[in-house]
Image (cartoon, rainbow, N blue to C red; front, side):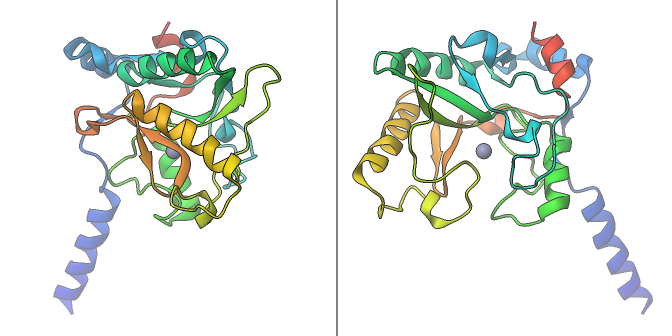
Amino acid sequence: MKNIFLFHFCICSYLAYSQPAIIINSKKAYKLSIDSNIQKRMYNLQNLIPNVVLDLKYNTTNNFTTKKLYKKALSTYMRMPAASALLQIQNFLQTKGVGLKIFDAYRPYSATKLMWELIKDERYVANPKNGSNHNRGLAVDLTLINLTNKQEINMGTGFDNFTDTAHHTFTMLPQAILNNRKLLKSTMEQFGFRAFDTEWWHYSWPNNANYEVMDIGFKKMRRWTK
Ligand SMILES: [Zn+2]
């Protein structure tokens, strides 16, 4: 009995402390990390990318959790190589009259923990034990817009639609929609991003092992990326 109790206690302790080994959550730690590798610098996407449209769903209650998960997210952020690739993508798409609309990019680790507490289902949210590429400033959720009228281009489902209609392998859609998804995917991949099988809107930058999880609020991130 004593052993069973001990075992149970150990499991609980393990779960309570199961999170990434390094979490950058202070200005000093952030500065040290970018001093060691300039690629780790975060960029304010609104300042960097001309004509980019932000529709940050987790800064509102209009998301699948129905909770406002972010505080004062006036912009969104990514690490240098991913941000720079997005700038090139916007410039490339502009020649076709198309631009980017971003639903989410950098996500503080505490927001991932909150999502997990609300949903606790790995099909829909990242398990905080490893942290997600959004926490590393390496993932972006986005769609395409018509640059003239700023309307979203039809991708067949909205953002955070967790049905198989949102999968890249789902082809029972009108050809025009398949072409729209293909334009987004082929462009993102051409500039170095990787697609995610079950979400047409989610793209991530490779080599995530080189980048730490961050838990820095949006207000601070805005100041520190000036
Ligand atoms: Zn995502």
